[in-house]
Amino acid sequence: MVSLGLENQVILVTGGNQGIGATIVAFLQELGAKVAYTDIKISESSSGALAIQADVTDLASMEAAAAQIADTLGPVYGIVANAGITRDNFFTKLEPADWDAVINVNLKGVANTIKPFLPGMYERGAGAIVGISSISGERGNVGQTNYAATKAGVIGLMKSLAREAARYNVRANAVAPGFIDTEMTRIIPEKVREKITAEIPLRRFGKPEEIAWAVAFLLSPIASSFITGEVLRVNGAHHT
Image (tube, rainbow, N blue to C red; front, side, top):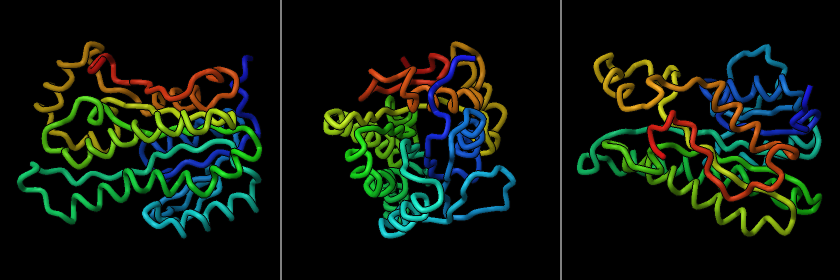
């Protein structure tokens, strides 16, 4: 069997308690990685991953998580900055608190996630970072000005970090999912869902596992060792 080279690599996934994050956690474990995940709330899990209650909007909280991961699993090789929220509304109706909440989790939270680990990655001369962006961050979406702004920001952060970190053999890339079949998208009314599906050339929503595969590929020191600063779209050609 061909290996992605993730066996025994320590990888952190934020927002790993449910949805796409939980799928990424489980898949990385299948590939032999030693996985830790953080979330604002942690439920009982038999996954075997190291679960840490932490708030990505609080740098001190993420620094404490970093210390716990290092003590329990060892030095971190990979980061998947997945934690995110939505507070959708038309821009003219968007409350300042909802703007700030999305910015704090989806963009500031990514910076807070990466910062505690980057010096160690630089010192060891190895590491891979994947920021979870979105089709909304690339093309925009009605009612999601705050969300789209953060997801576009994740792309800019990854591209700039890729240039800074390359000299230390640390890579930074983004995955931009389209509409994925999760609990979040299952609440979309059926007529709206049908309209969206008709706009997707592959005529379906994506699966969480398809995002997990993309993440694993970009984390791999074998399969993507010469890829950094890129955006991998996983959207069924909904946006190209």
